[in-house]
Image (cartoon, rainbow, N blue to C red; front, side, top):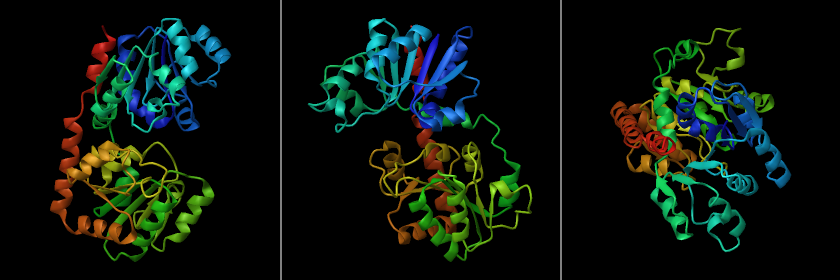
Length: 361
C-alpha cells in the first residue's frame, strides 16, 4: 500500500507528477489518497491515481493507530506543509518510510520558534525532506535536521505536463473569436472590484473571462449584475448565443488550466487581499504575461517572475488599469513577458526526477 496525503487541491496538483511516477513503478500496489480540505476531496474523490480517496481523521493517537492498522503503508508521501505530529510519530514507530516533498519553510513558522518543540519534533519523523529552495534547507539544518535535499518545486513539472494534454475548449474558442482576451483566474471579491471597474470603463475591443474562486450562486449573480458590458455565465452557454458577449463568467470548476490556453494576458487572484496568491504557474506555462496583486512575499515564484519582467504587481485601480492598457497596446511587450515566464518554468523543472531517484533506491 502507498499513501499520499495532501491538504487540498493545490497540494494534490503539486504532488501529482510524483504520484503518477509511483503509480507506474508500483502498478500492483493499492494507493490511498487522503485530504484535509473539501476543496481537494470533493474534486478528486474519483481519479485514476488512487484506489481509495478519504478525509484524513483528526490528528489523535486513536485515529492514527486505527488508520495505520488498516492502511499499513510501505511508503507515505506528504506534500508541502502537511505536518501531522501524531500520525508522523506513529509512522516512525512502525518504521514506515515517510517523505515530505515540495516543502517550503520560513523563519516565522512555528517549527523554528522556542514554543514549537512538539511540531518541530514531527519533522524528524520524515526519512527525507525535499525542499523547494535553499532557505528552507538551511532552516532545517539549523534545528539539526540533516536528511534534506533541495529538489525545487514539483509544480514546475506538473504545469509542463499540461502542455502534453489536449487543452482545446471549443466554447472558449467560440467566445473569444479573434479578439484579444484577458483571463482572470481564481479571483476574490477584492480582485473583482478592480476588474469590474476596468471592464466597465475600458473602450478597448477586448474579451474578458473571469473564473472566480467562489462560485456560490448569489455571489456569481452579484458579479454579473455589477458588469455593464454584455455578460454570460458558463451555466447559461447552452441556451444562448454567446460569441457576441464581451465577458464570460466561469461558474464551474476544473477547466481553468485549459482556459489559460486562450489567454493573451492573465490576472491571477488572491494577492490583493490576504487570502494568498493562487497558482500562477498554470498560466505562465502558456507563455503569457501575468498581473497579480501586491501581497506575494510568500510566493518565491512570483518574485522571480516579476524580476524577469514576466509578471506585474498592482496595488490599486490605477496600477491595474495601466498594466492592462500597456500589455494590450504593446504586442511586443506581451510576447517578451510571456517568453520570460515559459523560460522560467523550463529552467526550474526536474524536481520529480530528483525525488524519484531517491525513492527508487
